Length: 292
Image (cartoon, rainbow, N blue to C red; front, side, top):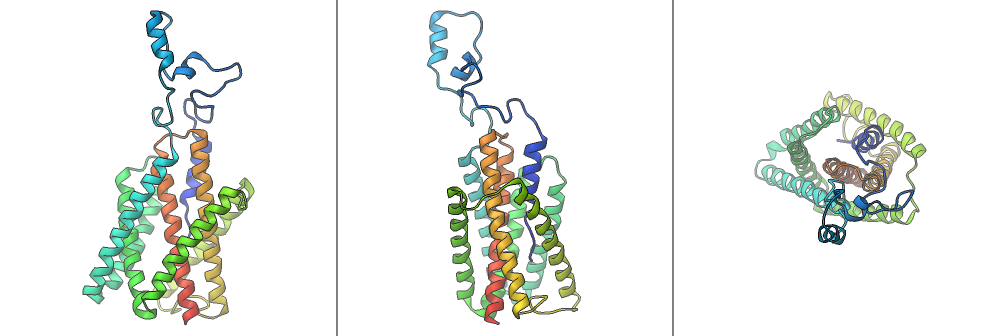
């Protein structure tokens, strides 16, 4: 399984296309062109009439925050990312132990998880409003594939390869976040457009490769095998998956900054986990090719 993360592109397009009341404008409590209004200061609508005590009580109340106004917050995205990541790990653990108990299940679980996420992912791309349970199902299916995939790697190359891939994925994640947070890694409109075409080409290439592998036209790890070309293709995959993380960080940052509706938090979390899993797969394939 190798491919891109189309989620970040959907997020960016929806944030730019849709407009909501107050979307992309200063949040409550921020200065406007002529100073804060009475409603912005209090976070509540103030009637034209009322006693002095009532008005004083309204002014004393704390301004409404992003949670009160139904906006995306960083904490919300982090919590939901952890939920989806936990579901992915549970699915991977169940799949791993099922294959360990019955090795004959490795192909059904591998292919079931791979095609299940592929089909569900395409379906979710065309949904205007994605039901929350679908994010859970996708994460579980993703975990099922990861469990079978990782068990195969551990059997063929040793459990240390899987551990190395996990540690490398975490290190790249931290490095990409540090690079984005410090401004060393930038995501611009131009880089996004270039990345969209690159990721589309790589995804198409990956689908063709999977079809050829299943039909027996090519074998092993696909085009290039474990030679220089194959290793080069894996390095390209690792690079694209790594930059996908930076794009996800930028999408989350934009959504929080613009005060996007809270419904986007699940989509943002989903996109981030998809990128992390994709990065792990690419790193694991690279390590396997190097060992071959």
